[in-house]
Image 1 (cartoon, rainbow, N blue to C red):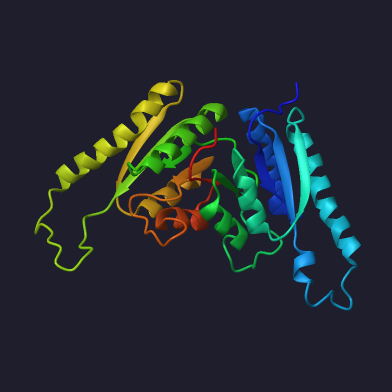
Image 2 (cartoon, one colour):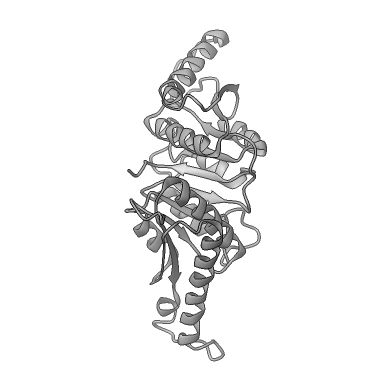
Length: 294
């Protein structure tokens, strides 16, 4: 039976190996979510050459368009190998990748991206398109690093915020369909002065602080654990850097899940400092959750 209902899983492709890795993951995600898959390639040449024209030895515009069509044709074939029951639509859209994928995210259940495409610079850990889409998409974004491992838990960062609750729910769903356990990580730091004149206690009751943070962690996963009783849960409380704790847990994880912003995020940042750091340094695929799409 062909799977073709609900908001699609969208994957961006550019002809790179990283994009084909993302297509395979996206096809599996569409399969388990029982949603269609939509493959998108952004064709930028008409805009790049609009004012200056093509370079003297550049391939003709028709040849570039044909190459773009080849990218999506290869991606469709790859998706069919992985999940033949999933309905697949593919399109080449004129314009830059970031606005094209952000527009797709408005009606998507999930956007899947490779960690770096053909336009990525060798010195960058994550491509600029991936960073910008992860920060601004209107649905969760899954960033793929190669072929994901089939063992290990799903790890989720918890901070007690509303967006963290969305991330925990997403992580439980992923753990359930993967048939694996979930590790909920909550890291806390000692209080620091933020504004001039802030008064901090001379001594901190570390045990009391740890007890409060443990309560935040327990309450954040309790409701979801009841909804997914077959998912084993391990709660991990860390006195230290949240980003460092999640990066360390990612070494053995199938997937790490974080909210786009947490309690410590600054309003001027597109991504919270923790999610930004984990995006660049995680050893596993990473899902960044802004809000869930029904």
